[in-house]
Length: 476
Image (cartoon, rainbow, N blue to C red; front, side):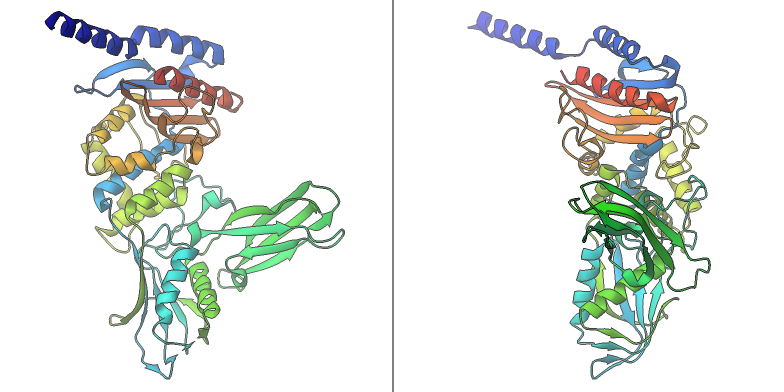
């Protein structure tokens, strides 16, 4: 029996070795893929590391000690820092409070709407908060809704973010009291030929003025333009204007456009007022910004899902708003009102303790919506390897990453490649930047990798396809 056991052992060893990726073979295959992509090698930063006991086995490296703009790959260190400072099960709390008595169903004073920095406070969250408040048996609020977002400072846009303001949802402001990612949904439907299209602003029409110039025409095509314009006076009502123009075909499907808002505290307050009114609770006063008194009575609160759900929202869909909200929440643990500068300083301290050399990277914006962030692929990959050894947070971190050909920003990628469903990675994209970083597995091993392209815009698709093809070779 012993010779048979020995033979079986040798066979399993040979099979196992056959599954390992040979560095020379992989290098040859990647070099051929790069040549075929027609991308200059100096525009690429690549590091592939086999995750092993030593954590030092590099299978392939190209310009891996050179600094590259990572775009949204930045959200990986942002997520790790949030887990480190706040903990995977941290919950954000939004409250409704008052300092007035209730008489015959009337709150004889103000209602204070207090933000706790929740980056995922949505319509469902608001409904839950208002539903709990309704059990106080209040049918009228005699005075104002006072919006208190003083947990954070009043700086809405990180100064290191691309300074050109957009009205698109990805360029949303941050605030301790924020709602629906500080973005509005504009739905457009056809009506009858020659008539104005139907425009529905959800969820808070009263915050906006809507100018509808869109018409319904024959056919299925949509030629629509939607823009959001801020009022010149920030105290002017309505606070922003939605302009819809163009045409939509009678047989067209519903069209939706997502636009950022500019005043998250007012936006949140008007949204609360709408939800209260839908529940039959009248607000006789206005929505104004202020601070709650030292002594109040809690009337209702909403506790968010655990932090890892916020990080999943950030990483799966590359949500810039969530990233910057998390940094201010980190800062709030140390000082209030929380500032972006303090949060970024704390994250940089964490990164340097995690192995990033002080002068070999640049982390100045949490979301990656800047060209000032810089990382070396070898240090970035080393960080990914280290994360896998942190059992207190790695399962949640891994779950937050998009899965190739399954969900998030990788849903439509690698669908016909060997790496379909085998890659969990964060994507990155700016003008002239494409990135992919995370993990890929085959039947025997797991690899950490960082791929970054910094070059001309016309080569972005080539680079994206190249990275997908490389993961396919690694997953075989």
